[in-house]
Image (cartoon, rainbow, N blue to C red; front, side, top):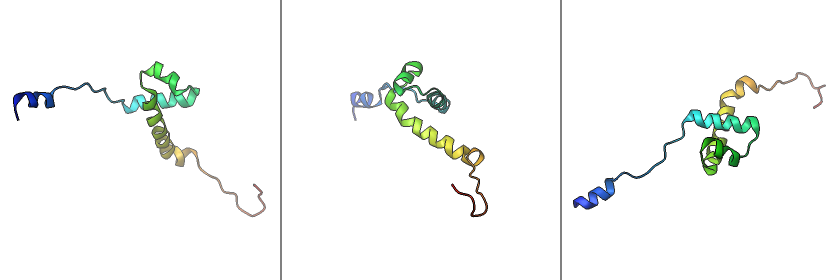
Length: 84
């Protein structure tokens, strides 16, 4: 491999920083609390709409899985006289 090929392979390429878990949670909670559209959130947090649309469902699922046993308990009524 010649020097020019090596330099072209190893040169720095522009990559965006990853979005932290904390930022994903903040954006998701803002979305859930306010009902803002993804388009509105891109201006506040400088994250693309497509990126937001990818991680919001994942974060919502994680929140649900973590909190379902504590806050979403199902109570069962005894007896057959209870009508639903």
